[in-house]
Length: 141
Image (cartoon, rainbow, N blue to C red):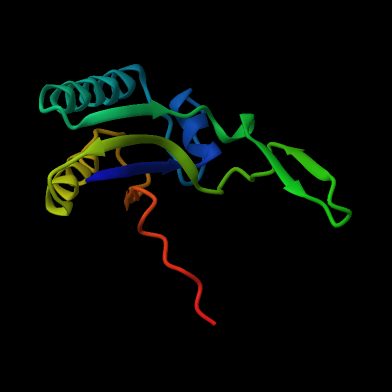
């Protein structure tokens, strides 16, 4: 079964990774960044080796986000960077092909052990099964 595994972050978290601390996100140093990247490289290499990795991407900071929605008149309304510094958004994801929910949960638990500076927020790892399209139920009256 395929699963989407997501991690989240705020703009303040991204700023912290560039050395700019805030009340909820201590500044990351060079060693912190190296440790995080080494951890993620090892994790991804293991997932490739076990043939569970389908795709993985880190996402750029929320400040580079664009939101498009339908306006009241049906025309698109476009907002650049509509999120505040403390709004959590997806920061990265893996699409994994795992034998079971238990296996993907083991992987998500490993993700939670990614090194970060003391006092950095511990964000949850979200697991969402990916459907093949036939799981959508018919609407009921």
